[in-house]
Image 1 (cartoon, helix red, strand yellow):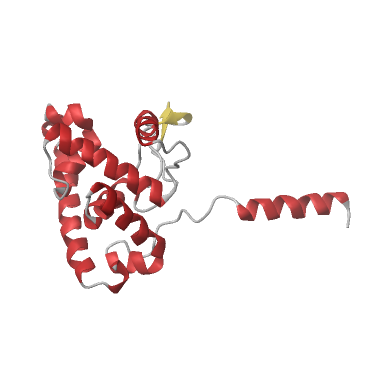
Image 2: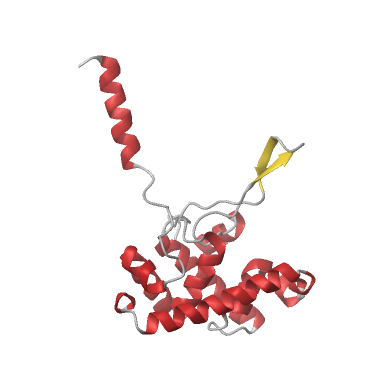
Length: 195
């Protein structure tokens, strides 16, 4: 085998090992279908529910809104003059769309230095940690998907100032998160994959 061909085979082998499957499940409107297609999700959701008390349906509705269950989701690029890329809109990344600074705070406080935003177990644990801070700082129930989402989006201080009231689009999205959480909750109640 020639050197070039051997190098090509090695590069292809290494490339095929990396990355993992970050694509979204097929049917995002059906909680049972999501869990059937991605069995590791329910383990992550249940672990977060046990550790932090955030219900599975609240986690799922938030992840749906933030990343549509795409593990390596990023915010869109910004462009100057409509064609020159100027970087991302924010540092949000992964299932939970955690910002760099908030993710670093989470890793420091929890001791999870190797946590990755594109790993479902780490992303759900982050959400549990953050939503508990929201409960403690803003008095929100862990079962209140709508308001937890508003605080998740606006930050604890922004939520306390009610900055969301100036954003009709965000209030609409938060209502959708609340509705989706209820839908997922009903579906999960009769779903064998949720056990």
